[in-house]
Length: 69
Image (cartoon, rainbow, N blue to C red; front, side):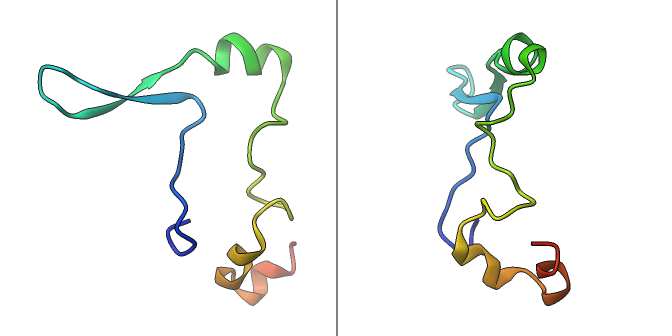
């Protein structure tokens, strides 16, 4: 992601600033156990192991691993 200037956005955590120390923390957002897991709803997640990856990402995958895609 760094090579293609993308930033990671956690699916099940939100970034919040603690007003006491000014640091950013990842806080659970109640989307996994309460929504996705009971419904087995994974369709909105990025599939890291298929052709759903952006084409520019493939230049960073080894030739051996490209055989899986």
